[in-house]
Image (cartoon, rainbow, N blue to C red):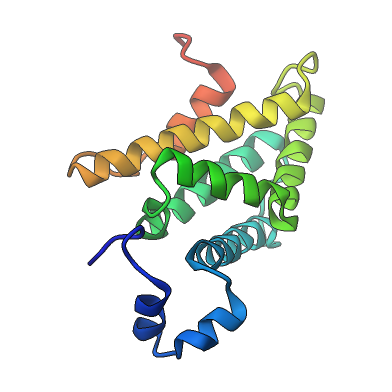
Length: 177
């Protein structure tokens, strides 16, 4: 396997059994193709989170837990795909594009509404700006997931138990109980 940076559109087209020209009809380059796939995967996560299920939690703490669990499961299921952009510059490029996309805006809006509900239920301080809290929440998830990807690559830890750790850090910080 060549890795992301050495792989060409021609390699991708051959693997997918498409003509190179056909791939270029839909994607101007490999980064555009990757982002389109990344965005589709994020839509899947958003759809799963918004899915109405019997017995689905209604309180903010349970919804936060569910969001973290679904996100952790998503990252675990897609770890090979997500590892592609693990270099800092690639990750920033993809994140910037995602934030500007409708999927990114929907995901951020969902998290913001979840934070506001948590503030209304006194799970999170009302004195904090919901947008800033959202960014901290996202940063905690992202940092721990990226660390777990690196650990997994080194043959160490797995994602097991990550959702509990993420939620604890987010709601309680590192304070002793």
